[in-house]
Image (cartoon, rainbow, N blue to C red; front, side, top):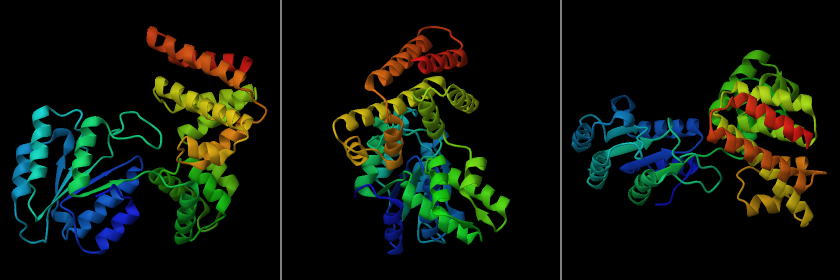
Length: 345
């Protein structure tokens, strides 16, 4: 069957019919975890589930467990957590596939991924699992159920946040919920943590827009947007504050520079779209953006900008990345110096 989302999974489970094979993955790890728990609960005995560590998988044990008949439940349920087909030996991959090809009608095998990047560093709406992981995903998609769990839109996430705040006895306006969704990149786990903190702070009161601004730590992409906007506006103080925040996150420098470059490319696309008489909706559709607010932010940043200015900044980042990979450098100093040079353009 086709790859489905969490809503379709819920509808499927309501019928009472389980697939023999499940695979859950995606960048929203909280949704992945929630879907796994739904299937385990539907199997009839969540406490009797056999859990295997995919990072140290004993395939002989897996094969034995998969052949067992359930004694006190309707299903023999096996949960395999974080099996990375890219890193295991070839004989392990073959053994896993052999088990899947001969799974018994009473067995439910559940695979989930939350502890490694199944996309191998790829980003964008059309990213796919790495080749060997995709082979497993495709097999299960044909014979069972695969769920890809990516963050919801800002609007959908804001609605969930408002509902969750009400359940906790707190009031919240939609602009505050939308800002919280944007600051957390629509990631369920971070939103839950931040909302728990906000609700505990107001203790049944109102979560205001200002409170979200003061108390919620932005995701990497949000801070990168702030940096990009400050650089393009030549606001040195704001830019260096954003640099300090980014460096405090301890993100690997190649990834950080790539994220800053990606943010500038978004603005460059917005500039080109303006010149061609296109709008944010056109750009979002043409380049398959997952979140419309990213394009809207790029359009705001592109106001009064030129492609030449942005291209000059991108060349500086490109040169910095070459230096980063060509020899021993102080990464922090290199990044700060590059931002300073971009502010001078």
